[in-house]
Every structure is written in C-alpha cells, then in structure tokens.
Length: 135
Image (cartoon, rainbow, N blue to C red; front, side):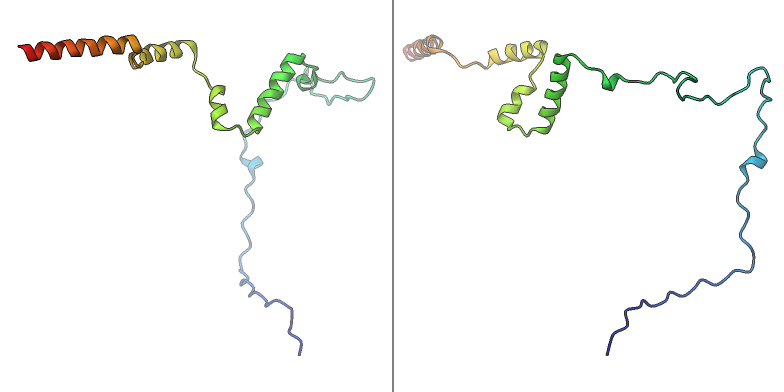
C-alpha cells in the first residue's frame, strides 16, 4: 500500500458577516497646500543628449588619488584584515610623547640599582652594623 503524500488541510477561518473597515484615507484629512505661484511652474527636465544639463555628481570615488594616499589607505585595510600576533601588534599602538615622558619619569623611581649604588648601600649597611655593635 502506498502512503498518501498530501498534507492535512488546515481548518478555514469562519467568515465574518460584516465587511472590513475602509482603509485610512490620508488625502481626505490632509490640509491643502498653499496655492502654487503661476509664475514659477515646475517642469520635468529631460537629461538626454542635447537637452537639459545633468546635475553635478560626487565623483570623488573615481578620482585618481596620489600614490601616497592610495598606499596609506591600502595599508590601513591590510592591517585590519591581517591577524597579527600580540607580541608584534603591541608596537602598532604606542603612547604619545607626553604620556611616554610621564611613564619614563615614573619608571626611573623603580629602576634597579647598578653596581656602584649596590656597593655604596652595602658599605653603608656594614658601617651602621659595626657602629651598632660597638655602642
């Protein structure tokens, strides 16, 4: 026996007795526009050959840009598309000069001591220790 491949029919919605409301008529309630001045008629312009001049278009996209501008735009797009490892990408976002100067001033405070400073510090500690024992 073959199975039937037809879909079960959906029950139809009951028919309503009253007609659907008329669509909202925007023109009927719209206020009238002020009467147009007959001296200034609006006429359709024909832009075909030998007729009205076409309006100016923005053609900046089709301009042949200087090479350095094209290169910097292409470079920006390539950098957006490439996946750069973080160890290298960190050099793409450097600090401005003022912030870098502040950072270096702060870093000087935490700079490790060099050999001569260490020698002086140890010598001073030894002298204090010796002075402390004799007292």
